[in-house]
Length: 470
Ligand SMILES: [Zn+2]
Image (cartoon, rainbow, N blue to C red; front, side):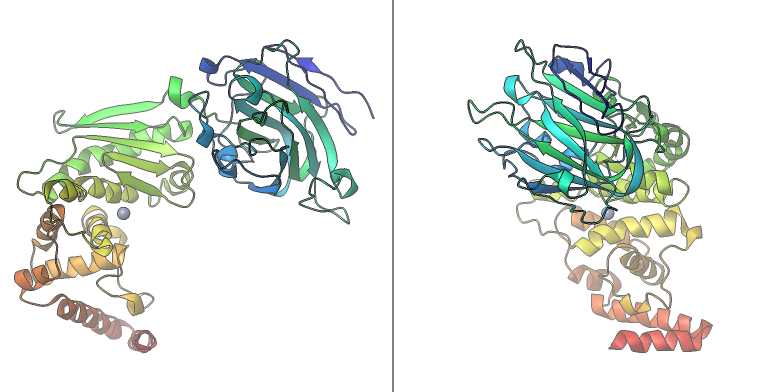
C-alpha cells in the first residue's frame, strides 16, 4: 500500500488520505459563506453527476428531524444560508453519526467523489471514511451496520477525510474532492459507503451539515454546476403584445437548454400566452402579466408544474422531449396560469372548488385541439375507449370538451372557465347551457366514439367496448 498524496489548500485544514492500491488525493478547502461554494481546488457542486440519480440509503444512525432527508444530498440544490437545516442532511444532535450508502445503479468508472458542507464552526468540517465496492465479490453486504467492518464484506477503504482545522478557522463552506490523478479514476464501483462521525463530542452539535454529495463518472457528461443560479443566472427575458406581458425563462439550472428555450420555446410563449388570455376571458379579470419559467433539477417524475405566475420545468424531461412534447406541455401549464382558479378563494366567500378533471381538462383541450391538433394526441381510440369518461381528466376530458364544443356550444369552455374562476362551477351548468345533463352528454360522446371506431375496425372497437363494460 502506497502512501497517498495529501493536498491541503485554502483555509488551514487537516486531511488524511488513505488508499488501497492507488494514489488517492484528497483536496479540501474552506471558503467564506458568501462565496457560493467557489473553491480553487475542489470543483463546484454539480447537478448532473452520477449521484443525482443514485439511490441513497441510511444504513446506520438517525437523521436529525430538523434537517432535510437524504434527497437533499443529491438534488443539485445548495443551501443559500449558513444555517438552513432543511437544505442539509445531518445526523441527529448528540448522536455518533452513522453510515450512508449509495447505489449508482451499475458499475461505473468513478473519477471523483466530492462532498460539500455549510454551517458555522463545528458543524462545518467533514470527518468520514469513504468505502467503495463493485458488489461482485462473494459475501458482499450492501448495507453493513456500524458493528461490521466494511472491508470484511466486500468493500474497499478509499479515503479517510478529516477537515477539522488545527487553528479553529473552519471556513463557513467546505468542499472535499477525492480523486486519483495518476490513475485518472478511483476505480470501477457501483456502491459507495460513507461512515460519518461528528466533529466533536463536547456538545450535541458536532454532526456536520452535509449539503451535497457528488460522484463524477469518468465517462459521464461534463459536470454542470449548481452554484451559478444565484450569482450568475442564465435568464432569457422577453415580452409580448407590445410589452403588456413580460416573461423570463431561467435556464440557470440547465444551461444546455438555453438555446432551445430561446429559439424554440420563446416563440410559443410569445404567440400563445396572449391567445390563451383571449380564449379564457371573464368580467373584471386580468390574467397575470408576468410569467416566469424556471428549469429545475429536483422535480422527480413531474414534467412541469404551474403555481401562480411561475412555471417549473423539469430539466431532464425537457431535454428528452425538446423535439417531442415539451412545447405542448408548456402551453398546458400556461393555461393553468391564465385559469387562476385560486383567485376564487380570495374573491368569493362561497367559492366552490372546481373539480380536478375540469382544471386539467381545459388545458389539455386547448393544447391538443387548438395548439397542436395535427398531432391527434387526445383521440379516443380502441385502446383508451374503455377509459373514456367525461371526468377521466387530462386529454380524455379534453376530448369530451372538444366534442361538446363542436356539437352543442362553441363557447362552453370559456363559459366553464369563467364560472370556475369565480368558484361557481356546478354540474348543472351543462344542462343550463346545452339543454342536456352532464351524464347524458357523457353517454352521447362515448356512443359517438364507439360508433366511429366500430365503423373503422368493427371487431376491435366491439371487443374493447365489451371489455370496458365489465
Ligand atoms: Zn395540469
